[in-house]
Length: 604
Image (tube, rainbow, N blue to C red; front, side):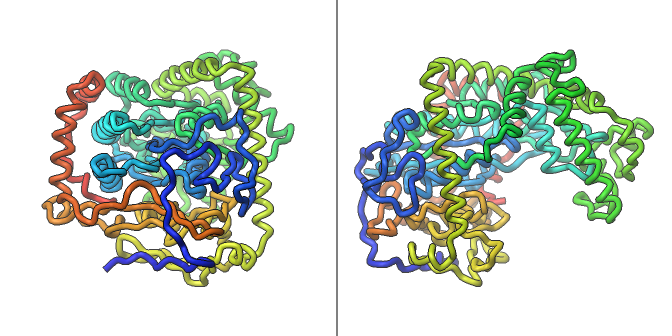
């Protein structure tokens, strides 16, 4: 039987307390959590948050769903939400599948029960990052996840709880280039790469950008559905105005510590950022015609970026060929993976052969110009571009309503908070394991094991130099897992990934489950023989031993999974699908043929 790890002992005894329903701005239960994150172990005497940065108190009840599209800056957003979890302000579910699978069903189920439980929404704050999953031609997010989210938002708001849907879009050229760098790179260098058509739009709908040769193009029905989707979201920001997006997120969620670690600011980094912010205001057609201060022409900012990326991917492809590197799509060693990431734009090859793996030809690659690559990229992102510019103009208008002077003051405060956070992370990096252990009572293990869902457990030597426990915020997280399979990481408060420094060392966070959330057992769930697990997240103060938890204690018993879903669907038919929003969604998604919903009960 699955059992969570027993809690590590803390100095003194933990005493359970409930936070008051109205939590003062800038603090958690009077514990002095500052907007800039404060220093490790700071107490009630800490400085109050800068008024320019944090304007809203921590809400009594708030739920946010962040639709994280790959290569748009979402990992940084995750770090901001995780900091709220470290500070005991928000519960966090990270890396949840876009397909409306079991993880999402658990969230709907928990919130459905919370709305029916006295005090269930008291001090209840939850952030959900929706990130992975993509089908070749069936837009699961549009057809299944979005209706559930919109219905849930209606119900939560009617119950007096905030609920927001947020996302980030990125200029399509930059998003496609970043997607290539992360997923393709040496497999097909930029000189030969045909980018997946409208990759960002595909991800938004729940479609994949992988398996390039088989990807069908998007059409007018997809465009109409996308337009509705982003209009139905509460905040649609753009990566090129990232700090402005963080401020918007701070306001709608009542975040008290919106800082994130920033890169060292120097002239050689500031100038390209300023240039990029400018040229991303222009369409492909305008850029190819010399717009954006001639960014796409030789010597321009975009031209330099493309030339650098092309040179890097060419060198990587040559190295892959030289060392006979392994294929990720089952092909021969050392070849370009045109059947998985093609079609490869090799003019000497007949069209049918461009979707078969091929040898890298350095001379042919070298003959391809920056302009050739830019024109090819631009020819495959028309929908992405239209959607992006509609979102950007809307978000720019939102920023303008803030007022230039006030916006500048808040942006400066955010950047100061980010610099302070980065400095604290560097200081913490220099501290020994034993020193950090003594502050928290948490002892790192040579053989740390976390297990969820059966199979091979996740193991780590936490005392090794390369582990970087502070980067993972391990001292503040009990029973967390850093498994590469994110479905196995829900047992703890956040995944133990090295992207969350500094460890705040304020609270030990632990999540209590009625059953293992990673266990894949669709048949008993589908047959109504098993219930959906409940969870509750609690934080124990390292200094006082006091505990506060999210929401009311969960029920130990509930409805069979399929019976609960029948009631949920009946409520949707009665309340959501008859609303104006539901009617419009039904219209724009009618081109998608429904699938059997057995996938609701699958973890993977």
